[in-house]
Length: 268
Image (cartoon, rainbow, N blue to C red; front, side):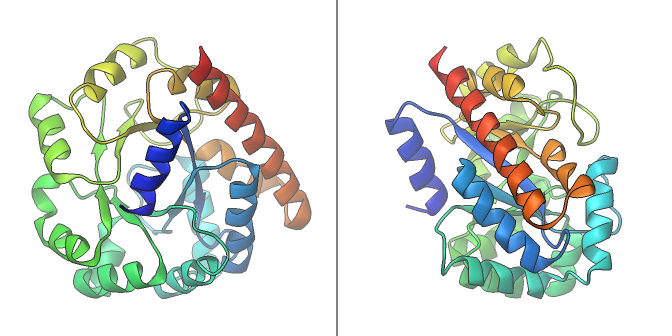
């Protein structure tokens, strides 16, 4: 089994749901990201999503766009990110997902990238702008290298898209809780529970929900119906306010609270 499958199996055995935390690789720099990942794990994160900075994002709101800009300005590259993951693998076995856009992968070379990502210790790729019907070539390479390839579902995904994602995806399925771009919201949509339950019943893979979740209370609401909760923009905002040890302390406190929210939601 993969690290991702192992992690969700362990969570299920304990009657728990997962907390997936997103940060941009290279913000403020790669050495800082390395320390942040270790701190997130200590605070209760079950999986890590590392955003690959890209100059022309289409699904990211202003918070993650600015984070991506900071990472690019710091000189972050795909090879640098993979080197950082390789260093992390000497210190942690937490599942790591690279989340980004296809352009950098295409420029790197899909076959070479899948191979190098797997060798570095990456567990999965989530390519935001690569739907299942266009992913055959990359999937061939990720399958060969033992990488999970994760696909997105949205509130507008019809039954045929759910079926396609269920057949071609691996690791977990990422359900986007709202239409539009990433960013913290003040409330979880009233229709989310029913829709997530409907989609989850059509899948064998774990279903995680992200986009807009920004408080422990919201994380708990989502944990009642999903297998995992993704928090991104609400975390990335801390990088605008804090640096160094203060950043690590603030992130740790917030992620601990999110984890408690997930646990409380699971128990209700």
